[in-house]
Amino acid sequence: MNEVSSLLERHGIRPTQQRVKVAEVLLVAPVHLTAEQLLSTLRQFPSRVSKATVYNTLKLFVDHGLVRQIHLDPERCVYDSAMTPHHHFQNVETGEMRDIRPDELTLERMPTLPPGTEIDGVEVVIRVRPQAS
View (spheres, rainbow, N blue to C red):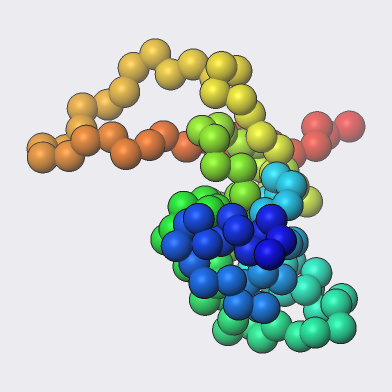
């Protein structure tokens, strides 16, 4: 059994051929991909994976803690395979995402939480664009 299949099994996911293909693209190295970018990459391989399978597999991976889903705007989200806590720069013109280490960003004060809630995590996305000439 290969390393990707073992990783899926350790997270309670049955390693079907399609799930392994998605994991090979998404989990082998830290990446930030939309579902459409992932689908486009997978279509370069001889064996096909359907759009529905990609979306279902991404949801499964999110639910089992293998990737994080980052909502960038109402129409687009990115799947991040780096699960250690970190933040992001997002280039609004190109869509490129770059990681920011937690020690590079300081939050001095948090707002008062709504009653009966606790912090589950903090993710900061700093949107950037090329400087005007």
